[in-house]
Image (cartoon, rainbow, N blue to C red):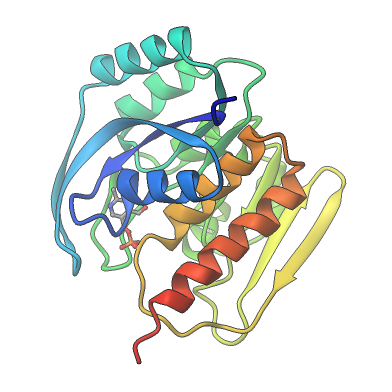
Length: 234
Ligand code: PLP
């Protein structure tokens, strides 16, 4: 039996630290098959993003439709979409009945903007999906405070708010209609890019394989922790 497919819509980072290449790595590592549609091409080294251009929304739409027609897509991961036109076009393409994970990419950790449009469009894209904001993104959506349960009321089915940007022990919060759960583990002080991309893709891979959301989150956190551990400078 072939591995279940995860359709990924995200930016191409040619250095491989983040974006589609990182997504594909995480998805394969968790036993699923990545199908990768580029939404934006970035000019990027392992150090920083220099600039990007969004891919035409019609090209993205044709690619997504073709893959959905011919492949057995079991989950969809959306990362960087680049601009408002792409966010709107992708929203219109999402089929019912397939779990969707949205990593709302607004900027790189080096500070380069990666979305040109109202941030709210990324929240709307996650309607009925799992939204995986970091603290900075959650603050943008909530207008100041980072509150996973408040974000849940805006339309996502679930919110996994990542605590890596906070001082001290990082705590990820998973909020669903059933309640809220915190996941905590000692900080791994590694400088590694693309952790957000990898986490969201790994959750999507778990969902594609039929894992319940909580188990998919636990497996994805383990994958990211292994990745960080491997990037600890010695
Ligand atoms: N490039 C692409 C295509 C991305 O999707 C992202 C983040 O999601 C980045 C760059 C930035 O990655 P980092 O935050 O690790 O710098």
